[in-house]
Length: 325
Image 1 (cartoon, helix red, strand yellow):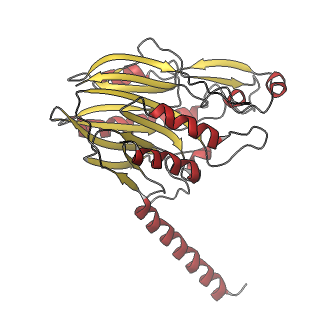
Image 2 (tube, rainbow, N blue to C red):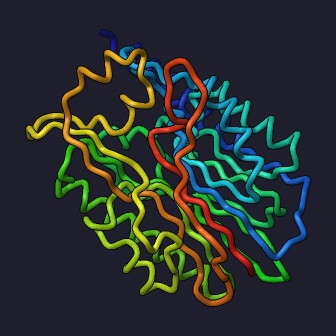
Image 3 (cartoon, rainbow, N blue to C red):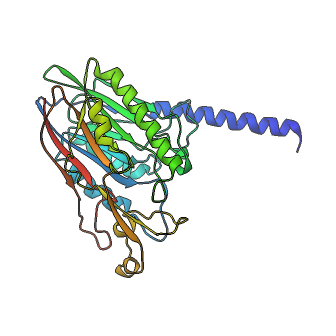
């Protein structure tokens, strides 16, 4: 091929990427019309499994699940969602439209940041009845495997309660695809945890902090509760109640199937034919600032739904907490 043609194609592709990135910045969404006046916060952190690509064997019925999800959102003041990927645009818009009509503010980055090499956004969405005074996104430095496609990191929003500034951090760490967790994946998760802690320290000098999300690692594999306690945050789930169930083969080369075959079943026969081991794990967390935040109650909620094929709203359970500030 002629060198000039190759050069022209390269320039065109570069321009397409630049335009795509600029559009990404313009499409980041903040909605901020309401402000709840209360010293109490009811909060939910939930990985809702609205992934970019569907598995042909097991339908995820995203539209049906999203319609039921927005009915649950009504019960909470702040909702931190994970796996709300922008390529699942129709269902994302359903959630955002619901927020705008029902007294919720939100912050959502629809596309990766301008400097990112990722093709998919973080999948993080924070919804709040409190006014959002500051917001932004802190990307992680390294991801491996399929996670390289997404710009994973920490989404933060600032609210004010009783004249106290509170930063809500919403995150989703490196996923893994075999069990036990390969060392290289565990190493990335440790690096991301350190990245979060370093940024929390910068903010916590003058603000209170709540951190929640899908950390993708069991407390038994990495003592997240202990790590955060050393950095001034308490775990709402001190009883270590599990938040999801992993299904996996005992062989070393088999992918984890997680909770998805149960949630995405097309028929009972499909479920009966799956012969896998099962492991309950705690990988979803909410941590709160020890100083001026009081935990009133907490729970792990498994939202069941009415559906001809699905049994649950997501492949994860949600972490619920109620605070007084």
